[in-house]
Each structure stands twice: as C-alpha cells, then as structure tokens.
Length: 305
Ligand code: COA
Ligand code: ZN
Image (cartoon, rainbow, N blue to C red; front, side):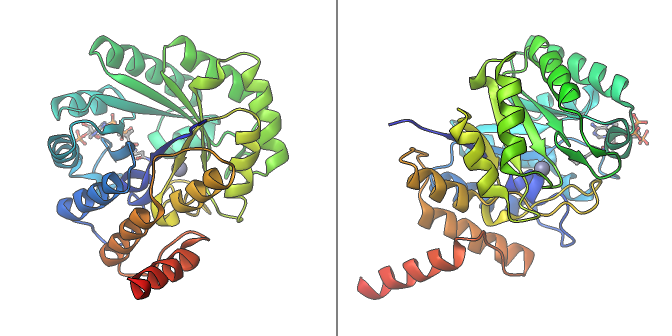
C-alpha cells in the first residue's frame, strides 16, 4: 500500500510555546506514547538559546534519553546555528533540522539574523552535519505568509528550497508557520517546487490556525507529497510568530490518510493515549478535530470488552 511518513513534532513545536514547564520525564513520556502508537519519526527538541526558549533547556537530556530508550526512532532536533549542531552532536543526535524563514523580518525575530545570513548559516550547518554523518532536514518557514511581511513570494520559497537541496538537505520542510494558507495555494506551490526538486525530498508542515490543516494536507497529498509534520493533539506554535496556533493534529492526519487508503503505521487509539498524556502535562484539554470522536470510539470499545 502507498504510505505516508509522518514526523510528530509535538515534543518540539508542540511544547516550545507552552506556558507550563514540562519536565524531562514528561517529555520522554510523550515520546514513549508516540512510539507505542507506531510513530517512527519525531522532532524531539531544539538546541536553541535557553534564554530564547526556556522550555527547551533540557534538550541534551531529552535526545539522549529518547535515543537510549528507542534506538530505532528517527529523532530529529532543531538547530539554528553551528553551536546548536555542536550541542546536538555531543548529546548523541543523529538527525538535525535547520530553520530558515523565507522573509527578512521573520529570520530577525526568530534567530536574530537577516535572510542572507540565515541562508548561509543554514547551508554551513547542513554541510557540517553531513560531515558528521547526520541526517538533515531544512525548514523553509513562513513559506506562504509571514506575520510581519504578508504574503511570501513563491519564487523566494523555491530559490531557498533549491539552496537547501544544493546544500544536501535530505528533507526540505515547507512550513505554513502561522497557518494562513489554503488548498489552492498549497497545490500551486507544490507544483512549482516539484518542477525543480525531487518530490520525495519535500515535506509539508501545516498549522491549523484557521481549520485548513487537513484540507491543505489533502491538497499536498493529491499532488504527490508523502511526507508530513504533525503534532499529536494539535499542540504547537512558534513563540516568535504572532498569531500562530497549533500544528495540524497527528490524529487528524492519520485519519485522513486512512480514508485515502494510505498506510501510516500509526494507531489512532495509541495517539489518543499520547493526547491524554499531553493533557496531564499541560493541564488543559487538547486534541485535534477528530479527538472527541476517537474518545467515543475508545469508550465504546471499553464497554464492549
Ligand atoms: N544553543 C544554546 N545557546 C546558544 C546557541 C544555541 N544554539 N546559539 C547561541 N547561543 C548562546 C551564545 O553562546 C550566547 O551565550 P552567552 O550570552 O551566555 O554568551 C548567547 O546565546 C548569544 O549568542 P549569539 O550568537 O549572539 O546569539 P543571538 O543572541 O543572536 O541569538 C539564537 C541567536 C539563534 C541563539 C537565538 O535567537 C535562538 O535561540 N532563537 C530560538 C529560535 C527558536 O527556537 N524558534 C522557534 C522554533 S522555529
Ligand atoms: Zn511549526
């Protein structure tokens, strides 16, 4: 069966902007439940300045703990610069993601570099990571719309994606960081990207700010994309991008894939356990658009048993 690859980014994108502090054990518990649900790839944490993102201060412990418990897990970590790469490598990480935004202002707000410098630093970091034998992802963030500069020109996204491809990023992650796009724009950008880059290297990263996450994923699927980021329970958002809500929920994406006859290897009831764990950690109710229905299914199964 045709399959889609999902990277669950909840331990990183999901937790980075939460007001409550989550312990290292709590984060490892979340990763454990994702693995138990069949998730094969996660973004575990980020090696950024703990002053900028205090929630990610335990990055070394999280990645070391996750790889020790789950040696076969694809466990990516976000690094904004060479210092982040150094820290990630020392902690045992085998896969990194660099974060390049497609506009000048978003790069300045996020990583305190302009677009030119951010592009060069991303290239250097990708080269250095490959020299260390690591796998690599490259985000192209605010690929559709920037909270500071408005609509992002597609030509710029294509140019930056090509540069990340030339720098040998294994996966290029096109991110709708603030969840502002719609299916027609997704189709258009995927078609343009596919004319200059191998489709199998492209991944899509949607946020569900306006309820368009699943529709956007469908537009990408129909145009050949098979790699997606998602966050269990739909938690997430960038602290430096005003108005960004959570990612498209992993459970919603898995349900979409199932409906389309695509294999994910992920079990929906297992994801519900991960949602419930995240609810305990964050002390509020969470869940994608399908989660109320999933909870009813779970209750029915329990009463039938
Ligand atoms: N990890 C930890 N500390 C880091 C670091 C990293 N990857 N990169 C730099 N630092 C430290 C420096 O050592 C220095 O520490 P000091 O003040 O104790 O001497 C301090 O941060 C400032 O270094 P500088 O190179 O001047 O960085 P900056 O102030 O320009 O900040 C970033 C740049 C990238 C480190 C910072 O903007 C950042 O961490 N942003 C987070 C982005 C993010 O996570 N966004 C959400 C996900 S997309
Ligand atoms: Zn995101």
